[in-house]
Image (cartoon, rainbow, N blue to C red; front, side, top):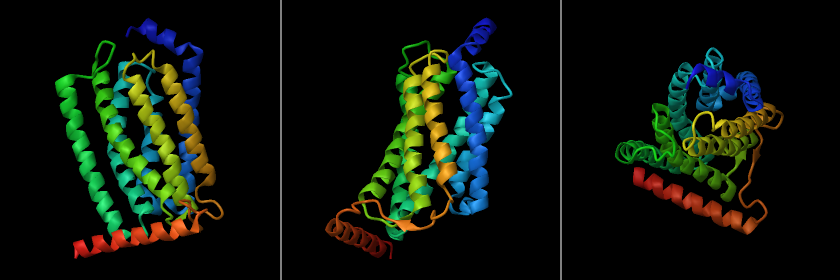
Length: 268
């Protein structure tokens, strides 16, 4: 992409809005990190804290380079690789939090999640090697990167969706902080994954609208976390799954206990 094209791209209303969103996201990340440190949630959700910190540092680094430039693409690839690694630990942390009442099931679910992630990484690499990116535009290094992250995000999205479904279906007692962490992260990561799916089929310039929508959703998620996490009543316990059906709650609770006890016996 030549310099004139970059200059033109940065002068459009969409790019100005993206720049504003990046500033808002960076500022909100700092506020969320501060709130987690003050409330002590950094000790409860350390990997989530690290993920938000990585996002803030990524944006800080991106402010030092020109949007759409080779330097921007390079720092984007490095920072998103770091975020992809942290995402693995965030998913495992979410399973630990959601299944805290059934420790044997939590350990089993975390092991399964690790196997799924490893399998996803191998299959993503093989798919890229054998079939390419599947892009409709001229393939570049960054499109190869998009393709790998897109396939990995597919696997990660499955794991995130599974834990979100679990807390919405099973009557597990969780703090309000834990519920907000898990449920909002489901929306946040769906937005991130959707960006890779759609933007991978477009040029960087054409994908501006997709990034604008994703940045908007991400900022709203970060804002919700900043306002709600660690507030009054944040550590009070509540149940979401089937709270309206007492008999179903008793049935599902007994089912979870039986599964957990069976896994405990297997571990022994």
